[in-house]
View 1 (spheres, rainbow, N blue to C red):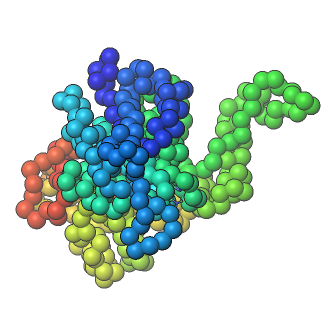
View 2 (cartoon, rainbow, N blue to C red; view 1 turned 135 degrees about the horizontal axis):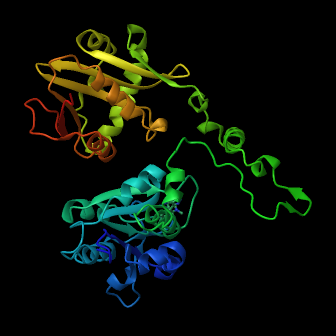
View 3 (cartoon, protein in one colour; view 1 turned 180 degrees about the vertical axis):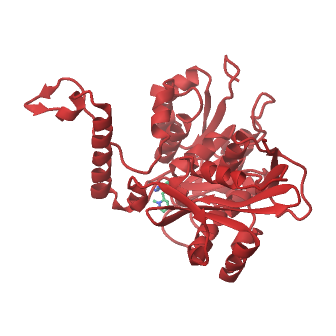
Length: 402
Ligand code: JD8
């Protein structure tokens, strides 16, 4: 707990180069540590060796180039980290993050997920990597959640630089670390475009003028210019991020028709594969459903689709179960999440409820943190389990407002 009672993120880092991580004493992250928002502990892997040479590596079984990090020191180091648990801590066990070029990409979404944990442990490998049995020990003996995460598609010599980047990206998302609340609000529009160019005083420097529009005081014109700049920059540097949804067209919600079925099928699969990964289950109806099942569901439920510039960007369906209005399949394409579209679809589904409906209900994954947060904000609360619930799912309900 911090002085004002807020939660702390504990971070343990194990490395053979603990000095590499001294950069975490500096700047914003160093300040957050002083303020007690981050509690960072760096451990030297060699402290968990018992031979005179403090050996941490050996030759690979099966042959091949280079050396492999031995299981023994790693297991002892992780046992030591896990034993640091004290009753003040938010989590009983750390989530173990192992940087590696074969990991899942480290993204802003991943940073956001990891910032919600109470305790993270990072294992910095070197050489060719770590004996696979260390991961098994962490999962099976210590009961840790283990994520192998890659900083990006290029080759580093070890995990330390990746940990510096990840801790900075995660740390700044911990409430209180960035004092200026606006810095995070600014980012939260998250429309997937690159930033606009920046200028500061003096107005003329080395014969170069600031673009006159920025001095005009016309806020609407400035916003439009900046948006243009963002689009142009994104097109030039990251064309992979550009698509029709970046136009200024509005989202329209209409009743689904049979012509929507192929796209709906793809949207459902894309959305529920993510749910499956989050919740460790493949037993999700949306994943095993065929095109014909999706077609048939248009007759048994009311399905709504959201389109932007013709692109299918979201959906929701409703069905009546006595006096309950069941809302299902609420989904939004990944790149347009966090902009209120899910909330709009939810409100659309709610407002389509006929007379006689007394409760609204829906299912979501017990570990789908973003969904749970949105539903909670919309007034939904956990309710008793229904009979035929898919595993890993929870039921949420709210009373209809009259
Ligand atoms: C951890 C050892 C080096 C890995 C042979 C040379 C992350 N985006 C990233 N690129 N590289 C890493 C990374 C590299 C590492 C280790 C992270 C531990 N190496 C090895 C296997 C192939 N090289 C990374 N995150």
